[in-house]
Image (tube, rainbow, N blue to C red; front, side):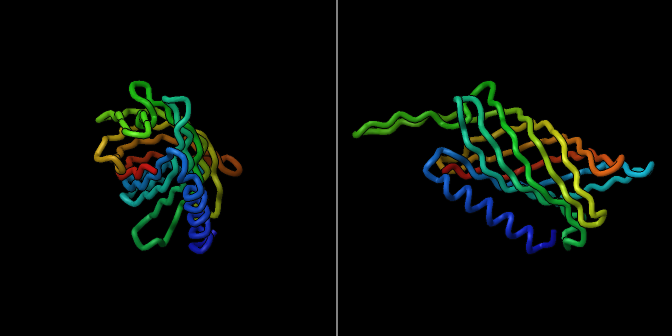
Length: 186
């Protein structure tokens, strides 16, 4: 997939998220550091860089849970000479707080209750394609994160992800992400 394909995938995600504006979902934009250790044909390679980018949509359900759909881009350097990219889907669990703000609305008033800090853990399925090795990987991963209330429309977000991926043949990879960004509440 080339840069045009990546743009089309991002456009599709934005259109899907835009159609869900009536819901109490959230759109997140995060960036940060990634590190990958890959093994193939008996050889191991490592790469790490502060050029991981993720756009996502989060939809709350059952008070403490939310579905997540993300698109991640990993750049070997900021020139885009080598890219890794792919879709991520999963769910987050907020053990201490609700996954969205509590609302009570009447004809005369509206009350919202929010938490200053909302820690969460998550599980997901991750798919990655890498240009340089022309290989696709897929696997499971775990997330630990924290949302910090900023104002009625924005939260700040910090997140760490650990992902194990398997590719064609005996190839496998481990990906670590440390991401920071904003969450826009719809």
